[in-house]
Image 1 (cartoon, rainbow, N blue to C red):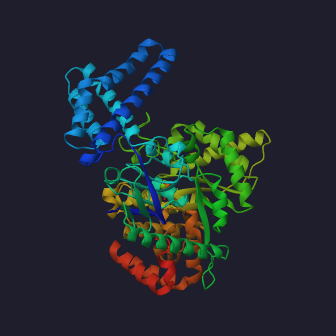
Image 2: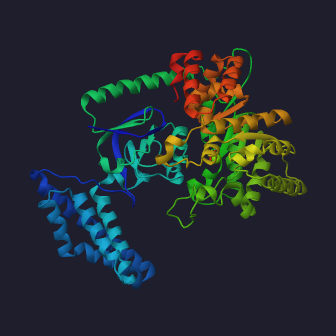
Image 3: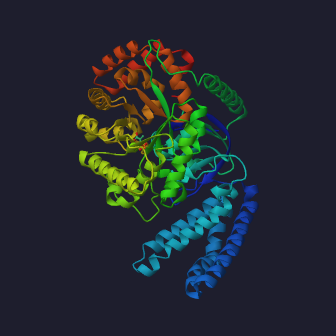
Length: 583
Ligand code: PEP
Ligand code: MG
């Protein structure tokens, strides 16, 4: 049994089989096999060679018929390598003489060889290293078994173990099969973590070495409440965790019972609690958890799931479906927040500093045709219910003015064609960059509502990458600088009578609810599973207590002091079961 500690990003407990998703970065652990298993280990290697050989022959045949013999010849390099007797012998020696596992023997031999070849002075020879890596991947795919081959065709429920998962990979996961996940890298507000919470999949990230510590098929416990992953648990631990799992599920069930009670404080202040979604299908879950609408629809996932830029009809259908299910409750559609931060690194599009690059509204300004298409669809859907348009990552007032200008142009175009739309559709901005928070008054004067995106606001204020486990300890919304920026935005909203909400993950963390209410926020938009507990917390509190708590926090100059104070206050003001319900 081995216990690994990481960052808890999505609550719940899962006990089950590990499915290892092997990418380029993954190291294969140095694993030994007992002497009596040597023959079967060597046979595993021989069988893998036979299967990969057949695979390569088939691919070569297909390539030849589609592209001709020259292209097919490229694949012969791998076939020759695979059938090279001296290379095979080197791998078998590692198994029989050094007692290494077949996986390790393959990885070590082929990676060592690739290194030598890559260092060659001749570029033609150096390029061949990629063939060796490719062959290694094929052999490992087979040796590690079906547990890691094709994520799209999983046969049974698994805990997915990966070095990293891109947002598009997470979006495409088969949720009926992937019941939990654990990764080497990542932070609490990485988009992968956000999706795990939305899908109610227990998840732990930032484990640094899990892909080398676990083998596919082994039993693991993923404890998303405490950020712990237990490999090869013993019987006592398994029994203990089965009990924890039942208790957690029972606790969730009691919360759900009261989900439709109003979110009004003991002294009568109403706070709107809404849900964050990535796909129209999630509206059902949002309502099942008792939300008063959708406060954030991250529409970029329409692109990320399919890999194809949505056309006007794709957009319109997504909004039509969502708004019709909402029955008059608001749908807040955020325009595409795309950039190199969300697009897979191995795709052609990359930037040295994606979070500071051509992201969100900047990309929309560079490619206005996509933005226009989306705005047209949003406007067309605006007569079907209560639709709001939200602009991501506004850093300067001219971006807001530009976007509003486009909205007006599209309105005129639709009016000309007699297509109905809501003339008064509210246009709001995400406040997720310090410059927008510092200029909140100017922004509030010109937009209809503001939504604070703390996931990015924290990252940009504190200069901490939201997805990097090495700096996760520095990433905290409790930093006084962040709290002061939030206060500034709320005050600007009050001054210009514009609603201010929060849709970053901070809004769904029970430890901050007292502070957020006290600062004057009137709308919280959170991951659907957090809705019932946040509503229950609001019902328990007095607004006046929250206000005095927030006043105390505003005097503090240290994040730890803020957090200690908020935890102490929560202990005093909230019932004991709720405090740790979603943390
Ligand atoms: C945010 O930055 O807080 C936010 C809600 O947007 P996203 O997490 O999609 O970047
Ligand atoms: Mg953001």
